[in-house]
Every structure is written in structure tokens, then in C-alpha cells.
Length: 381
Ligand SMILES: CC(C)(COP(=O)(O)OP(=O)(O)OC[C@H]1O[C@@H](n2cnc3c(N)ncnc32)[C@H](O)[C@@H]1OP(=O)(O)O)[C@@H](O)C(=O)NCCC(=O)NCCS
Image 1: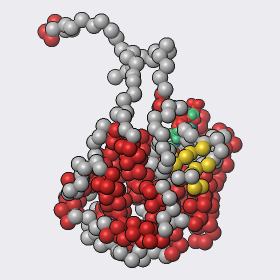
Image 2: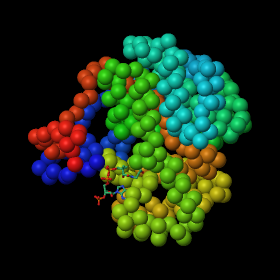
Image 3: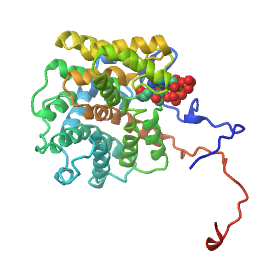
């Protein structure tokens, strides 16, 4: 189907510049390159906080006391396991299923097992947010094992959110460095204004649907290569290029042929994305520490060439790719890792939307043919 472009109609294509929600959760200052959660700079949170503490801040609006943080931690840990019926169903999924599709399906299925599913009260939505945030890493790790014909690994209750996820992948306790790198990555991905998947979550919530529907929808939006799927696309691109010498010709060719290069560009940032700066630093340190410089050096080269040719900044997905890969995480888990973090942001937005709700219902301009006359079926040519 094609829609003839009508130059008289002014459409906010991609909803650029449209303010569709007021939020107290995160502030993306695109011209300054600043991101804050509840007024706290992302750089300070990445340096000093943990994922669990930052989620507490995002959900409840203030940095928690030690007692409150321990309370939330206990709830997270207690909610990590998946119902047996859900694990049983996962074992029947086609083995070709991608982790993002499994995540979307299992989140939807978890709604069927949750007594709070259709209760949109604040307390029920907080309980669901805790359960979903706690269970998402378990789903991703369980599928990682099931699709390779192994039994899922039971979550541990003595490890942090990040460390437990890495542990559940292969049953080995991660190094403190690996766990902390993932912890920082989770902090950096937690929330980001009204990005595409968060908009989807808020739109679904605005119909007074339920949390599980909102998060399933958001997962569907996140997996796209223009959004969270970009981190996997970046790594595949680097692997396909194979060598630093291939970077420059690839960039020339892509830009000359108006092809997008994954990991570059952003709707809001007109300067450095602060998350990308953090991840670039971590990628550099990791390359130094492991002695495996290949992916970092290729990334640096690509950043330089793209900048010289097109002045595009890297986004959050560019360096996260080589960071995760160097940590030994399989590529198909990169976007699910984004989701493992962002789910806490989505749930916060769903709850915020419901506090002052009006159904999301933008307008469209009809540009098709008018005054058509119905022709009976047997008279049509
Ligand atoms: C993020 C993204 C979807 C933002 O899209 P957007 O705000 O609609 O921006 P546009 O696609 O209109 O881009 C504006 C211009 O920059 C160019 N551009 C943007 N990102 C580019 C990229 N990654 N590679 C090459 N050119 C790019 C566009 O071609 C366009 O050029 P034009 O004005 O000559 O037509 C887009 O930058 C992109 O597709 N990036 C690659 C995917 C990615 O990394 N996504 C993760 C985002 S965190």
C-alpha cells in the first residue's frame, strides 16, 4: 500500500518535538548532553550507585535509606524464580525463538499467573513492577540454557541483580569486575524520557489496560534495530567487518548510499550521549585489562571516521556492544540486557501515567481518495 505524499499536510513525522507526557522520572537534555534520574546526574549514579538503589530512587523518588534499600532487595531476591508452569511452557517453545520474542511472550504469560494482573491500584502495580524487574533476568538466562538443551539455572539469593544474571547464564559466579560493569550498564539503560518503547508502554497504560500488556508492548518496540536492537546490530557489523582496515571503506560506502550505521545518531542528543561516554570509557578500560583491543579499536576507528564524514555522535548502543562481547556475553542477549534494565523504567512510567491519565489518542490526516462509489463485486474489472 502506498500513500501519496501530500505536501499540504503537516505531519509531525516520528512525533518529533511533540511533548506527550510530563514526567518526574528522567530528564534528557539533548543539547547539553545531560541525563538525570529524579534530578541525579547519570554520571554520579554510574560511579556511586547500584542498579537496585537506582531503581529504588526512580520508583520512590528519593535515595533510599539502607533499611529501605534492603527491604526492596529482599523483595527482588524473593521474586526471582519463575512459576514451574512458565518454565514448562518455555521448554515447548520453538528452539529458533529469539530471546526478545521469548521475553515478550513470557512476560505476557506471567500476567496469566499473577493474581494482581488486572488490579491497577498503586500497590498492585508496585508489586507487579518488583516481580517483573526481578524475573526478567531469570527469563533471559532460562531461555539461554533451554534453547541449548540445558536445564535453567536456579537464581541465587546472595548475589546482586547483575551478578545473579551472569551467574544464571552458565552457573559460574562472575568476577567482581564483570558484575560491576554490568551493574553500571543496567544503571545507564534504566530510563530515558519518552523513547519509543516507553511511549508504547505509556500508551497502553493510558487505555487502563494492565502492566503486563504495557511491558509486552514495550518489549516489542525495544527489539527493533532503530531502538534497543541496535546494540546487537553493532556487534554483528563489527564482526562482519572483521578487521580495522575494513572500517573506513564500510563507512564511506554506507554514507554514500544513505544507509544508517547502527550505534550512531539520536533524536534528542545534539552532542555526546552521556551514557555512550560512560560505556566508551568502560570499553577502553576493559580492552586494556583483557588485552583484547580488537573491538574497541575498531569502534574507535568507526567513531572517528563517521565523525569526520558526517558529524554523527555515537549512542548508547555503540560501545555497549563491544563491552558485552568482551565480557563473553552472547550477542543475542544484548538487547534483552537493555530490557532487563529498562523494564524498571517502563513500570515507573506506567505508574506515573496512571496517576494523571488521559487516553493517548493523537490525530491523523486523511490523505487517501475521497467520494468513492461502491461497485458491486461482479461488476468490478
Ligand atoms: C536513532 C535514530 C533512529 C534517530 O532517528 P531520527 O531522529 O528519526 O533521525 P533521522 O533518521 O531523521 O536522521 C537525521 C539525519 O541523520 C542521518 N542519520 C541518522 N542516524 C544515522 C546513522 N546511524 N547513520 C547514518 N546516517 C544517520 C539520517 O540519514 C538523516 O540524514 P538526512 O537529514 O540527510 O536525511 C537514527 O539515528 C538511527 O536510525 N540510528 C541507527 C540505529 C541506532 O543506533 N539506534 C539506536 C538509538 S539509541
